[in-house]
Length: 284
Image 1 (cartoon, one colour):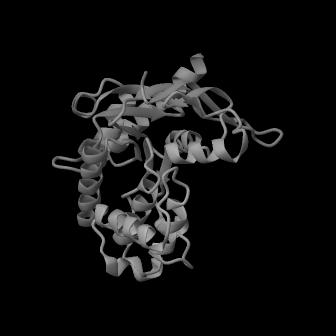
Image 2 (cartoon, rainbow, N blue to C red; image 1 turned 180 degrees about the horizontal axis):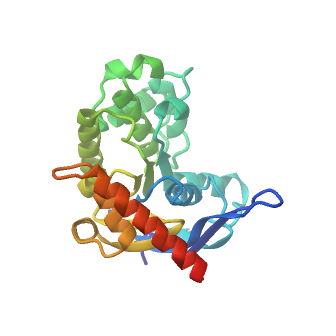
Image 3 (tube, rainbow, N blue to C red; image 1 turned 135 degrees about the vertical axis):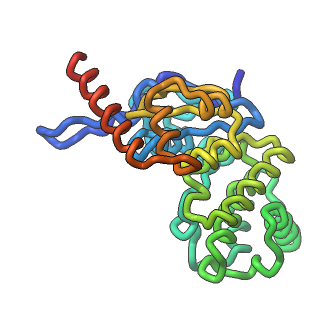
């Protein structure tokens, strides 16, 4: 059995009377193995963040099934013990650490509060401090950062704290939602290198949500391409990004700036793709 198994997942946002409903996730199925990094790519509105939030438990599903390490993620948790078990199994790193870190708390207090959710939580101030420093070292931060509050850190340092907090409960899966997109390119490279190192050392699995194909190529062994809530292509990252078969995958890759990039050609390709999709909907 795979660590993560998603089968026929569906999510429809009901619109006000007279407006069309929006299908955010359209019968999506995929799996993630232990120690594997899988990428979800697609433009805004493709459904990738909705899928991520369902896995974490921040969004409900309308159909399908999701299991992590054999445990159902979609049914209502029965009591505090089960809620904590689910939280420990899957953690999330958001795009903006400013919104996910409590600005009133020091880094030490942020990590201490999370550590107390662990089954084998360290007991006593000295043991907690030692574990906080170990976590900071794991994300290449120091004792100096432990006493800081979020506003006293750089963007890259805040994101490292967010990663340390996710790791504090020893999760099976970490969901990273555009986790490096707000960082400078040089800092992005450092954080991606850190994430790859953590995965090699711990065996944690990643679901990496991104619109940046270069980031997916760097970190993920497999990728799923989403269009209007549905998976239109999936496979080994090198294969999908080098020789994409679906027209939407081809458009995404063509839209990425690089050597020989022609923005006018991309605009024409997008118009042609949009027209084809409109024709398909009309025929349907």
